[in-house]
Amino acid sequence: MKIHIKTYGCQMNERDSEALAGMLTEAGHTMVDAEEAADVLLFNTCSVREQAERKAKGKIGYMKKLKARHPDLIIGALGCMAQRLGNELLNELPHLDFVLGTGQLHTLAPLVESIRADRRQVVAITESAEVLTGMRTHHRHAEGGEPDFKAQIAITRGCNRFCSYCIVPYVRGREVSRSREDVVAEARELAADGAKELLLLGQNVAAYGWGGNVNPPPSGVSPFAELLEELDRIPELLRIRFTSPYPTYFNDRLIAAITGSRTVCHNIHLPLQSGSDRVLAAMNRQYTAAGYRAVVAALRAAMPDVTFSTDVIVGFPGETDEDFRLTRELMNEVDYDNSFIFKYSPRPGAKSASDADSVPQEVKEERNALLLEDLKTRVAAALRGQVGTVQEVLVEGTSPRNPERWSGRTGTNRLVHFLPVADQRPGTLRQVKITRAGGVSLFGELL
Ligand code: SF4
View (tube, rainbow, N blue to C red):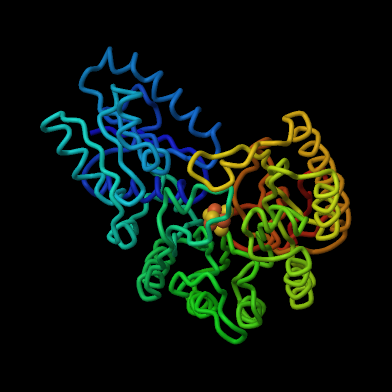
């Protein structure tokens, strides 16, 4: 059958969709880009914000017309919103053939076959440990194209932290880690298949192997560091990135593993959420602004070239002007290269949904705009500071906006454009002299 997958939400969902595409092609199906060409339409949904759910529901609703024209069409909702709503989703969108939750994704291929055979509606949302080992397939090579040099591996699933605004622990279940042998074997297979850059994924990736314990490991202990060290020894790999680590898991052992590694990039995504201790406590984040600053200082002392990105929520219930000022101050102090700023919206089922959404929308918009403006100013200054330096970039391919130019990324995750030389190949490391800074990227000459 011809199958199309549309993905909403985070990188974990992107990776799940890629694994599902791998699973379906192994089962003999073909992935297609166009919805109209598909016999099966899959929507891998997100629940993190109301907007994401609304978008997916709207899109699935719109597919009713397509199904009226093609009654054999199979439509499935998968992932977080499917898990959260289950039968309710089938009632709301009765042209759906199935609803497959986060714990049952590994059963997709046989489920599609059984629906084709007997056309009954199915809701499968029970949690299952098998999803942990059943989602290691990949779908990385475009038809006839170059081997893709980037690959993603999910090393944990679920989350135990229960931040008060977050729905993830309810829709993705408790935190579980894959075995180190399984992850390393998957990484070796990917490297043998042409992968040069690995992105390790998990809701709290740095808690890998710590048994779901919400207290971070003590000094000198970090199963995640041990995993990084083992992956670092795979000779074909040039770079390893990971996202997202909870800030309090950066102990001496993990920092030493990063600085001592050949491949781990000096770019850390370090979710902040708020710079106010009062708001952090209300969010059930297990650190203070001072504790967060200490993690940043330890990482900077060990890696002077490190760059940071972050997630921040503006307009959390009760956030005052002073709370916001503290967030803004901390963000400018850390000097993030990138930040994902979210305007708070309550998620039914998450703890903070019972608090009044007290910050008016226009105040959220204003705070969001101020942080974006700060980010723009900081990034432009940071990029100007790179002019004249020589940077190692991992070549990605032609620039999307100018096919005459190529681009690549530094280990610190800055985008660099340059004119290619003959026989240029994606997935190779090159030295580039930076000659000019743009608003969001750098320009240079290959050395
Ligand atoms: S750490 Fe907090 S924000 Fe991140 S997934 Fe877990 S509960 Fe959600």
